[in-house]
Image (cartoon, rainbow, N blue to C red; front, side, top):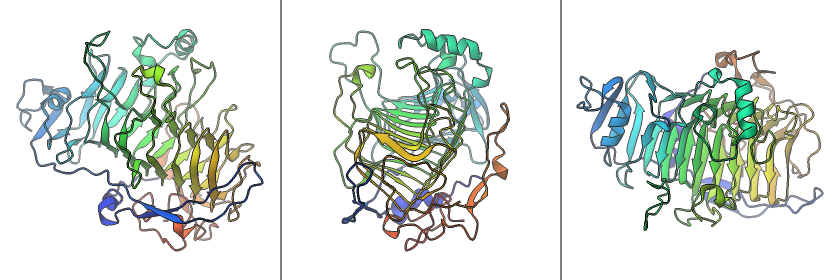
Length: 489
């Protein structure tokens, strides 16, 4: 499958204002509850970069920290980041960047943009920068806001990790020592500032990141998660390819993870967290989560602990539940060890027009979409094909859940009602892989297609009132009778 990163989809916030209509219907548990209709709401998202009119800094693998930052005299990537001011752009020339002797991050971004003048990090036009790292992070955003990160490949080199050593490390890990960085590396990590010393100086306060766009990146072979955020708000993660991550971290990572978000404000008229148009596959955990001593995650996408009841892990005393609405739309998740989409202790989530296929590959995972202690979650217009013997949607201790107008093929009975308009048939994909390639062979993405055949029962079977205006590729979707899943072509 060729990943086409169309500029149309990211312009939707301006061109369409993304006035995406989603229903407010809800159901009462237990499973014999009835699905009812209720008034609809319109929610846009307005996470879009503006004001990129400042200086352009050029970085290169052979750049110098004291260079001029021009094409003729490029900077190192970190030196370019350290020079930025609001409105600036950093363009990375093609080639391989490493973390060198730095154990924390290959690129640490601390300088913020402003609401009127964002800062952009991108590939030099037509070139492919690769960050190959064995540090804790490939790219880290530390408390900075109003940023765009796009066009990078992040290679965490987890193929070099000794599996026996990783298992032994996870068994003995107690949550504190991260010096063996080869077991923790996250591709792109957005998180709060860290104190300059321990204990923190008197009067020091954390800064939480917000208004961050992560798009058009390829993240793979990271021992930890692929793309992850913590204590963040107004996050847009779109058009990324994330695969073979999270194998060796005792923290139980996933392909794309939103964890313990902090409220930048209390707006309820927009989506404040958006995960769209991503492709996540073959992410898994091969060592146990150190707290529970089980294989816990390796999901394609997870909304994780947004009730913020785990503040002791970060240690900042923040306990306010995240109150922003969350949109998970037009994503393709397949052949992940964990769930396709996991919603855990996170509320107000809309899971719309995704294609989820043969996830929950591990024996101890049961659901394509799992809902754990979540409230006010809506699941519409998806294609869900579980691994044989697994279920499409399942979970526990959740209420106000609305599920309808999905194609669900081959699912065993679940503990949530699937609605009156469920389609139970083979979706008839063009070329969907039945299994992952053997060993560490790459997935032949040019031979994979989750487009629908002409006579697919998913065509025209969606609910128009829940239709997102464009599909995964930015193609305009029929919003009267939309196709189910992420793709229209």
